[in-house]
Length: 565
Image (cartoon, rainbow, N blue to C red; front, side, top):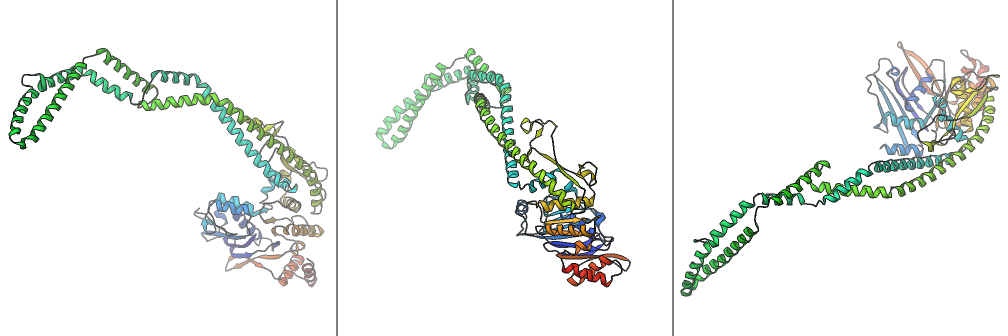
């Protein structure tokens, strides 16, 4: 519920504040005093775009602030998801600046316009000459019909089933596309798998081959080097092993004289053993080492094959090719099991499709029954609102367009998250004239009264608790005005209602009455808003009854109207 509204530098309003209550809040005043400006300011709070044209002359910015209490759970959730704390209250502040630096604050924190538009349309609904667009949208007609049919639970089920169907359809299509893609690639994958299997690549093989190539390419040099080592160590006339062996015998004799020479003798004999082993290993290596052109060619061919595979598979190392080989084998294995996966997804899709269409059909039956009843009751309601010859109809449209996804289009019906029905209200206010789409022929005053009647018949769950009716009394008076006022009072039992009226019959029913007056001070126009006491209300109703000159008779009549509300 809207608890407080503060407006500053907005059009001809310098600064005003309204403390609103539950029930029926009435705004009256002389023509041109600025009553509709208050509703325009509330439009900004509801998320409409602001223009610098609304800023009061000689001011740089206009400000509108609103305090809401008792927020619906869905609004609390949207605010929480957006990172805003509420505590059950919400202060919305709109600042419109001439420089274009407009700002929006929710509980003191900056907010994007999209979020305000989302929650604002649920907090405040405006119905009037210039703000009745919600009744001009077919989706609104469907919402109102569902509310009248009390079908909220089934509507939620429909939405859930539709999203399950959409997800199942997407999963099935993606699996089919993936399977078809793998089928197209099957021959290539099989050829690649065969080629890589026959290549018998091993991890680290390339490094081993390069090392082997290096050895084979230098085999002659390695042989000569080993033979030279044998000559130096063991086989030559001045071989180290022979010379050191003779000296070892001499040192052995000396150590027998002095035991202190035993350690160097041990070291020398150990060195001789190591030199002899080194010579033996050089001899064995030389015996194995020989130039092998065929072996070198074989290694080079293998390296060339590895390079070819690396280029073909865009790999930098053999390990990358081995990894690709495993991926190819996995893809072929998935292809073998793909048919089973498709069968499971097709079953899930078929189940989801059946559930969604069955729910849509149940919902459609309920709507068809409710539409007939709504027609009867709406024609009865609007007859009492000054439109006695009105024809009202609820028509179901057939979806003729074809869509790419067959499960969402069957026998001229297109399935959506709201079911398979497209609903539009038709209307004829004049006898003998056929009913036409309401959006094309209804005037602002007629729209307001139609919305008033619809709200009286269907208090839409989840819709914002603040309803604004502008020009709901257009073109009516007398007994009809009294009926319209009582209908507003009836709606106000469930919603906070704010309405601008020129009729004392409606104003007399107010739970809170505000008067808008225009004043001129020092050559400038100011609009003031004042909440009236019971005594002041009598004066205002007398003015509305009697015009410029308030007679005693008008005052007595006003007192009777206030007492009789």
